Image 1 (cartoon, rainbow, N blue to C red):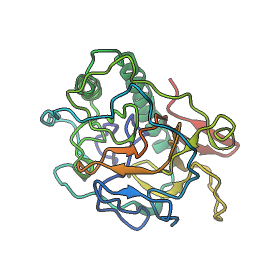
Image 2: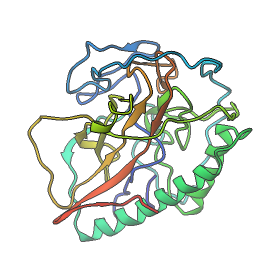
Image 3: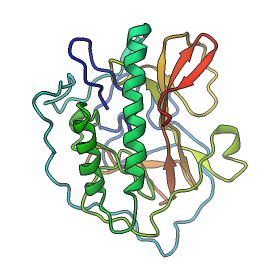
Length: 289
């Protein structure tokens, strides 16, 4: 979400939602046409779906495939809240090639934005229960954000119609809240990263993190698998880490809404996200409650 600020540019912490899935992307991400698969042949460093080892799995028996519900009209944001540059346009912004650096003042603002993001995410978690619709969760999250005088950063980004992403069952990321009610069998696998996933029979999906700050998405691109590309970070940089974990295949397809990415075999997925500040002696997770 976007921290309200009167004169400095707004800051974008890691939000409860996630990222680029639109079918018109840019040099750092590979466009995945709606309804098409992200195949294992797409091995480019610039691809949104990178080749990943596919673990054998079966469609969970007794569970219906994820189906879309009715998407309600976009919620309004009060006029006194500053808008991000992408508001009012369907255009998906390019990932900024510059690496954002923070001084002491912007780090203070980044901490404030991330503290709000953490509180909102924690609150959203309390709403996840049977019979609650993802649209109701979106309304509650939207209200909490604007009550804090902030702009919900997913809203309007590349035409995304809601203030939070709600990715249920086999949805990997970018799920659009709708009228579908949550049920008891909507569940997530436990979460491990990188060297642990194979041990537990899981796979890391090929979606990425990124630099974040006054610009929503910028370099560096953060892979959640081993990355042998050269490069380093320095104190003052902030970035997101947002791995998605699959209980089966990492091959995905995107619905014709241009956002909702699901596993082709129906495998359950889980995702979590944090914004991290690089410091002189290590790193600080800014989105902890």
